[in-house]
Image (cartoon, rainbow, N blue to C red):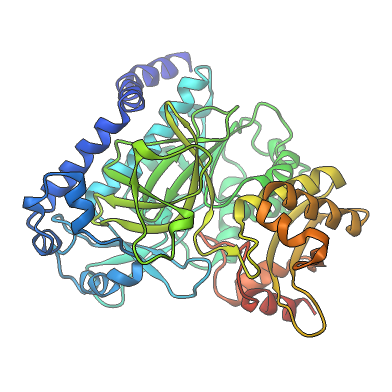
Length: 503
C-alpha cells in the first residue's frame, strides 16, 4: 500500500503545484481563462452575434453580453438538442445534464461539452483524490472501491444522437473503462432509472465489496445506507465496510444530516469532504477538513462574476469580478464556461470566507427564500438555526420545508415549518423558541419583523409523519439522483401539497 500511495503522490505533485499556482495568482488565471473562452468561441453563432473578435477588455465583455438565465437561452438549447451545433461552443454537444430544479417542475437541459467533461468535471474528481491523499498520505482509500450514488440517463427523445440525464450519470457513462475496477456497483446498476429497484440491486451488489469511499447527495445516501443496514442486520455501516474512510458529499447542506451519518459511521477515522459540483460546472472542493469552506477551483475553464444579492431583481444588476468581492457578503453567481454558458446565472448564492486563497460557502438559492414580510430569510439562516435548535434539544432532523403563513383579518403573519424528525425533541415548544431566537440572532430583518410580534408571530412547527417527504418525492417521480426537498418557499404551494399527504 505504501508503494501505491507513493506512486499516487508522485503523480499528484504536478497537479498540486498547479492548484498552488492558481491560489497564489487567482486574478491572472481568471483573466487568462476569459480570454481563452472568448477566442475559442469567436466563430460560433453566439460569438458572431456579440462580435467576440472585437472584445479586448473585461469592460467590453460585460457591456456587450447580457446576463442570462435558462429561460433566456432555452430556445437555443432546444436547437442544440435537435442536433444543431456551433451555437454557444465550437465542439460537438451531445450530452445534456438534466436538472429538475427545486422551485419549478420544468426540467433544464444544460449542455455538456467535451471540454466541460474533461477539463472541469473529471478534473474536479481527480483533484478530490489529489487533495485528499495529500491531506492523508497514509490513506488506505485505494485498497478498496468507491461507491457512487448517481442518477440515470436515457436517450433524448428528440434526437437519438444526443443524450440527457443527471450529471452524475453522464460522468459515469463517460468514465474510461478502467474506472470499473475502482468503483462499485457496475454501470448497469448505477444507471438504473427506477430508484427503489436500483436501491435493491446496489445493496445486493455492494454488501460483499471492500468499500473505502462514498460519493453522492447526503439525503439519498442516508436512504440507501439505512436500507443496507436493514438487509444486512448490522448495527452500523462500518460493520459491513470496516475500511470505509471518506464520504465526498454535495448537492445539499450537510449540517442537517451530520448527526445521522455519525450514527451510521461511528468512527472519528471517517473523513468528510464537501464539493460543489453542479450541472453547469465543478466549482469548489473542501481542502481542509477543519474548515468547512471550499476552495474556489479557478482553472477549470470557468470565468466567475458575482452579483450582490440586494442587486438582484433590479433592471440592471451590477456584476463584479472576483477581485472585487467582499467577505461574508451574499452573492449570486454568474459563470462563463467551456460548456458554452455565457454570463449565466446558475441560481446559487455564496459567501466568501477568505480571499487568500479564495474560499467560500454556499449560502442558498436565489429563488429559495422567504421574504413575504420583508424578513429576507435565506437558506443559510435556516440551516444554522435548525442546527442550533437540534443541538440544544438533542434532536435530529431528517427533512424539512418552510413557508409563510400570510396575514389576514384574523391573524398576523408567521412562518410554518414542516419537519420530519429522525429523533424528536422532548418539548416542541422549546424547539420552537430556540429556532425563533436563533433566526433573530442570525438575521436582523427577521428580528425587526418579530419585534413584539408587530409583523411576525412566532413560527408554527408542524410535525411530519415518517416518510412524508420520501412519499412526496415518489409521487412526483423524483426519487434518487440530484432531487432535493425545497427548504424555503416564498409561497405555500409546496407545503400545502405536503400537508395534504400528511393528514
